[in-house]
Image 1 (cartoon, one colour):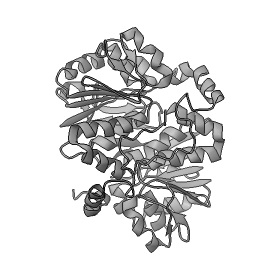
Image 2 (cartoon, one colour):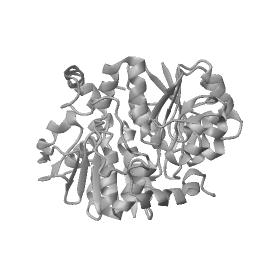
Image 3 (cartoon, chains in turn purple, red):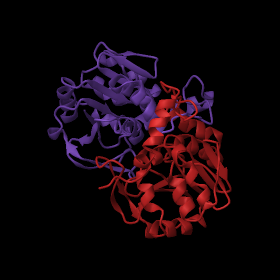
Image 4 (cartoon, rainbow over the protein chains, first blue to last red):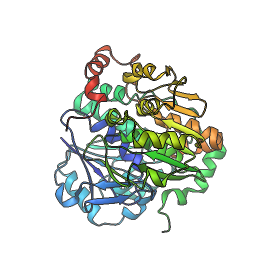
Length: 215
Length: 215
């Protein structure tokens, strides 16, 4: 079973690294980091650079696709190589998945039309323009599409997915391996529970957070 | 404030990616991925390669040091460039931190002597040989050392640390930004709660999990 993690400039690496850590060690899984071309891809921070091991042309039938989000998502909304590749591999993939604003890319590629999906809480109002119904769950299954909320939700998404793919015991083994017994020091992980002023500050800086840096 | 994330071959990338995502966007923070030499570093999976932006010689006074673990940790236990660098930067660092079996490297470098610390649950019994008292908390502060339990605990560690460095509001803002309102699909994140056979299987495969692949 091949799991392909999509890279593009300006991605949020934690979006794909949670799922990577969970999925990559499931017996029988082979992983590939794929981008338009093989080679270095600069993330949302210049200091953090990943290597794409393969270009789109080399990865034609992944069983699972994971699309991360991040500030670079805004540059991936127009039709082009990534959308074409996503539409192509989606035809044969068992699961097409996203974390954070990665679902906006899937939506813009036309893959989530008529579906329920989620994304980062700051970007949820962008889903309906693509014919997508925003859902309230942290991890949303609709057909063979699985979308997860912001950044850290990719861990929950991947554990749920491993349960479906390889069974509860395999998923529990991965959860125990990464010692995922979370103890957040604050109850500020969603706009419903975070202090009002913290929410308001992020809403005010929304464009700066969701869009690419002017470089 | 410079935060240095240590890379070595065979590291578990999620160990440092949780803290990276939390710390890198705190106002005033500058990040660097540092290894013995700048250039590509292959993680625990050949498909996942990070770029070290700097070598040890170029990073002499980081304010915060984050040491990840992973199967490659076993190759970093002998005195050498990493230990020498850690002992040197620890003298001036505000916080020296680790995630997962990264604490074993700090311990082997002589930095945790007489301290309380934690590590991945499968490796806790390795701490006493370095004069370290294993602690039961998920995130352990002792002096300017902060050690976290297995892999995913780095997120909790970094949020706690940001609270100390920049205040509760800054930490809550990072938690909300990464939508860290965890919903693990199973209650299997610690050996106390996971099914007995899942724990027994990992204990049985412990050497294979903690030690480098024979390559």
